[in-house]
Length: 365
Length: 233
Image 1 (cartoon, one colour):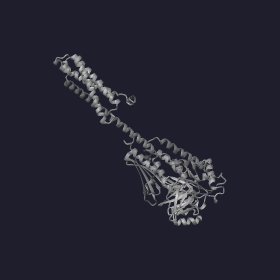
Image 2 (cartoon, chains in turn green, red):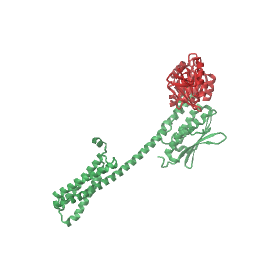
Image 3 (cartoon, helix red, strand yellow):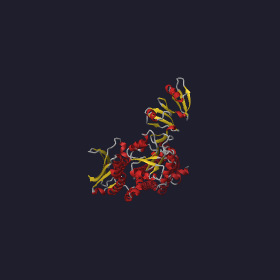
Image 4 (cartoon, chains in turn brown, yellow):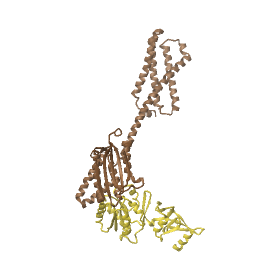
């Protein structure tokens, strides 16, 4: 099991080694400086003391590294706090005992500063142990602080990346595609038209190609120029006109500057398709559809008006329109919207309006 | 066989008509562009087989079938296979994907011939009804129905292991059923007389009918008297 957990653990980071090395050598350097300042006045044999300081620093380095390895191997930072604390405390206490023993050995064999009896006094050993406990506790706190900080950063980045992936997936799901019913109905009509009216069938193939090419090419794009979308919608309406025959009349009014505005692909198409599906096709006498685009107050205003009347229940809105709305919300936030309403006139009309911000602001990647 | 073509696209109808031209035993008696037209045509022309586009503007092909007391053999046509059509696979005669392939049409017509019989509409023709519960649909030969059970404004229909709850009242359904086959057992039940295997007299003068498939239906005293007359017990 320990092998498995070791395999899972990532390599020890360079940052850890740097901190560890810097920390302990800073401590040793600090002690050496103090010694260099104080030793001449105290008249002690300094070289041996210097060695003692370095050896104790090295043993501190090794012992704290052993604690670190235990923390990693036994995943003490990933188990409940209640069970982790006693283990961390025990590790510190044990490391302090070892460090204390090394200190004693050095005092006996290297530095003969104080008599052996004085060194073996329990009170002296206890205080020395306490100092080492404090030392390793400080080491642990620094380690935990750094670890927590790094972990949070990583978690934050991870969360951000997740959000981005989710948004992308959402956009992909909402992407409007050519309605398969429409496509196969077209092919069905086309097959008959080949017999009935070959020149018209040829035109139909051209238009269907244009629409299919647009649909395939714009599929992976976030935005397309409105004029390209308009061309595709023209092809689409020409194909629908074969189905509706004389029941469908179309009026266009696209302002010249509006054509250069980038829009999400298939948004205008969705509005027009909706107008046909829920408006014109339900009227045996057919009707007119009018499509307008203009820039006002640095917003692109798309408008599709068709003969008909909104059915009372909201389900009449259709999945295409709901998807388009969600797509705009994801891309532009509250700056874009789609409204659908009845227009009171001499004849019943339904107006679908889409508003899209023109400037490539921060919200448009 | 008399065939009716229902599709909102003229080109789709004329395409199908062209395909059917090569089948001598099939006569296209009419065309309809929407559900209302189709309903009138079915009632007037009494076709043996209806080619029905599932997705039409306005009322769908399925809603049309629900309005019929008697459903002709139906072959669905659809541009794209969807759940609604797949649900049908079990009980619909057949469904064809547009553009319709000639050999698939042959298969569907073979199935239709088996159901309609060689002489077209004759005494052998079975009455079929369309049943819908939520997303699931069935076209059922009426004689396969064992019991109809009233549940408020709804009726539960028992047939061949299924028991969908239909949004039609038992009284409304009774009016469309052949009284020599279907018997009103009580206020809440209609039973198929051919499915009764045994009758057990009850103390109050009623009867309990045991049906094939293990169903037991109580028959009220008043109706029990009628049943004895009908079956001359």
